[in-house]
Image (cartoon, rainbow, N blue to C red; front, side):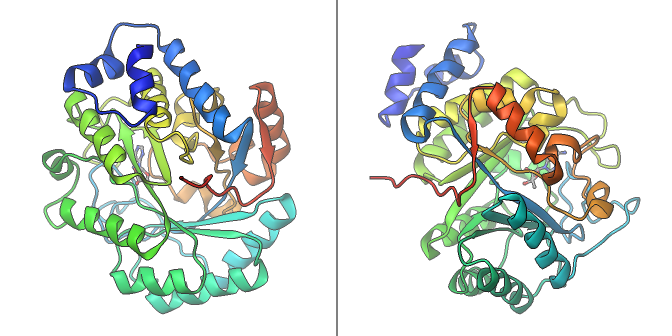
Length: 345
Ligand code: 5AD
């Protein structure tokens, strides 16, 4: 195993069989997690970066088969924050010590290029020492450009799966794998710190797909990678599908750390949802970011991507003191900084 992980760290290529062994082989996974933790400590020490997550809208024009806020789900009530409400979240977050704000939402047609531009400019004007991350889905390149021009620093757009045929099983015909990949390339070219990512254990996913994901990450070199287990949502076509497992997700987190030693990798909310210590285990397997929820408390339940999504306690910005304590218990330290990726040489 360590022979393979050392090759990964120096950017080496692995054969299908070698990847297959790392992903699903019969070896002690704790050893892999320890290797990943060693690599994260080379570059980031024990620092854990925090991001204040603001879920700005749960309107979505897409119909991803796995997602609870898909267009076809008529059982949820939809909400959209105003610019003022978003700024109020930032104000609260700033006082708590957050220096990155993540504006995440469904693909909401109300969010014109100009509307988002105004909100981003407003945040950057008031908090010039903070990073703004956007996570608003697929947009025309011009939108990405104008938002970057007014100061948006980072963009999260999970690729979801690097296999075209698999992508087509998770999305309806109008949603295109090639378009997704084009958006990711645009974002990187424009100069965003770009985040890709995937769900582990999504329906129809086999080891083959995960190998394609790892090779995609190796080639694309995103600055950020979000990895969480698939968790079924009761109002979607995948309601009856099993959730991804904890160990499998941690394995993919660790392999991602080894493949992209300097990446920003969150211990995701989904990981914290499938196991009470999931987030801490993610940190110990190579993750170095946590994203507590800064959304107004009254809308949090409505941003229901999957069932039982945790949004209170340590998942919430108000739980920051408790979060700091459990991060410390795990052997790390929450730092109050923008938390940019260390420069790739
Ligand atoms: N389980 C886990 N993650 C999900 N996402 C959407 N639906 C689910 C689900 N059922 C993830 C997707 C998306 C991100 C915002 O949330 O990967 O990119």
